[in-house]
Structures are given as structure tokens and as C-alpha cells.
Image (cartoon, rainbow, N blue to C red; front, side):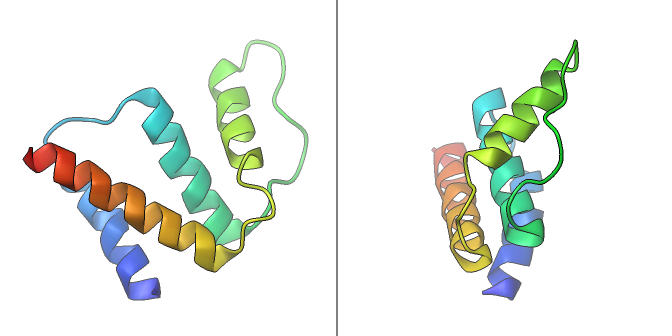
Length: 86
């Protein structure tokens, strides 16, 4: 599955149009969960809205195994490619 996960990381960069912010956050969160595990550290505060959104998205994946996060990432990329090819 690691090879599929690596391929999905490359494939997402070939999309003709950039996914929306919610999708980008989900891709980010699944990638982080797959490569680093559960979120750690403090949630960024103040005016770091982007950092807070990333933290929240990653935290939403908490408890998911690396393998499941990889599989979810691969599936999401496949859906995006399918939509992109329309």
C-alpha cells in the first residue's frame, strides 16, 4: 500500500484544477495521520486561522491507523481524479 500512497501523492499534483479548501484540508489531515500518527502539540491560536484549521482537520482523524489513513487518502485522490476527468 505504501507504493499506492506515494503514487496518490504524485497523482494529486496532476489535477487540472485545485480542489476546494475543505478537500485540501482533508488531504493534509489524512497525509499527516498516515505519516505521523495522531496530532500532537497545542492548537495554534490567535490569528493563525490557517494553522488552526489544519490542526482541527488533523485532529478529526485521531485514532485512525496509518494504514487506514493511507487508504482513505488514496480513495480521496481517486475520487478527485475521476471528477477531474469528468
